[in-house]
Image (cartoon, rainbow, N blue to C red; front, side, top):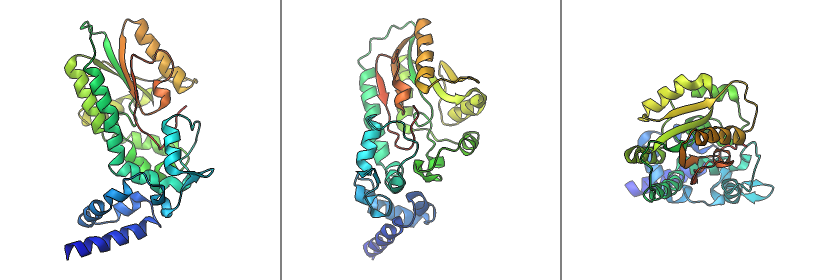
Amino acid sequence: MAMAMVRVLLLVAMALVGSCSAWELKIHMPTKRLQAIDEAVAPLIHALRPLLGSGGELGSRGGVPCDSWVLGVEAHNVRDWKTVPAKCEGYVGHYMLGNHYRRDSKVVIDEALAYIDTLKLSGNGKDIWVFDIDETMLSNLPYYAKNGFGTRPYNATSFNAYVLEGSAPVLPETKRLYKKLLSVGVKPFFLTGRAEDQRAITVANLHSQGISGWMDLKLKQPGFKGSAVAYKSGERQKLQDAGYVIVGNIGDQWSDILGAPEGARTFKLPDPIYYIG
């Protein structure tokens, strides 16, 4: 009887995916039914299969399937894009809400942890690791899940209102890296594109998620007009000029890790939702 019910729920869930986003499907389901559907559907919706995109269609950007488009984004071959292709909303939503995003993040962090074990640290307090914040330490997925998983144009007003709630959850894999760095004596340094007037809420949000003990938090100052690459590479140069050794640098955007000095080793976390040049 239980298996029959799960099969029925699975059929209902697959039918609903064709008419609503992954987030909408989840928020309207009772918890027990949602759990049953997640368990039944998990092997399907978490796999990178373009037929399970929005409406069961091959989402495309100029004819490119959603999985190939996301690969192009992560490899930095697809650049300067403004929104996720509309037909890929369901595909990206399933990826982000399922366990595939977490697994891909784990691969990156596992590599970072293995790298840390090879480091010969100076022990003079000058070894630092640069972290981005949004989609690197804190996740804005609750916001993007309600706003089309990146298929809608960026709205600074609504996004900043979300930031000011201070409710962004920590990304658990990155938190694992952060704790490891503290344990071996490497100082975390936050370098974010958030504005200086968001300092207090950013600090509060980090503390609420168990993140503390960083060396410094650098936010973008009023009036800065350059690109993200120019801003972040410039700040890293200041650190290097002050005698710090950047043993690692991690972010979700290529603009977080491009531009000399990049650091001794860079790590790119997945983010198929938005692009910052």
